[in-house]
Length: 269
Image 1 (cartoon, rainbow, N blue to C red):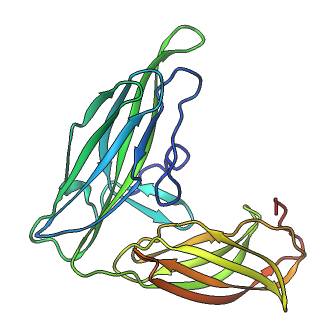
Image 2 (cartoon, rainbow, N blue to C red):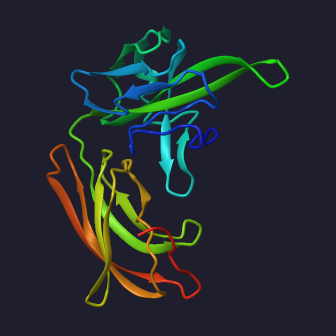
Image 3 (cartoon, rainbow, N blue to C red):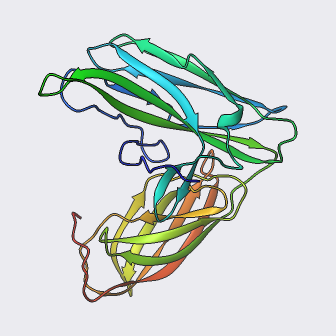
């Protein structure tokens, strides 16, 4: 069962290292690193460390907890009530709540102990770092503001690997951008970068790069290309996906994409 989509409140490390800010001045601001942890289980165990830093001038109260998650190409990131790939059931960390002084950092160790009878596969969870803040509204009432940053934690049991394929390219009328479907038929999540070139015949219209995006095992997602301003018609989109610890895996592609006659891509070059 899916829980409500918190994407508007949470920024995840599959894309960018960033902060979540509470509204107004004087509220606690917290940064977390790294935002993605990948580990291979050895004798059923794996671990990682996150560093939580208070970048504001006030003390920050942070609560830490974990939930299973998935990524749906149409909806985006979603937490789950349960999942066969749920790592949170086997995840331990301490402390679960901490107070961090202004300008200071605290480290939190994440330890996963997989049950011996679990089948081989990739287990994952999002570890939320939730900042708790008490303040007053314009009427003088006490209110609590909550902001959270998620760290995605992947643990692999067995010899697993991704298997990426490039699907079709199409025009996203809502985003006013070209989108490229990337599928992962493998047993492990991949985090590829996309290098691309758009041509019309022999003419190069534009080229660019889409920064790292996570493609979960046995799923797919759209990569949105940097917007351009071009006329309707049929174009050729080519390039390559690059991923792996040392960018050792590369997948070239070439597909056609049609810009509808009623649409143009209009954002900065």
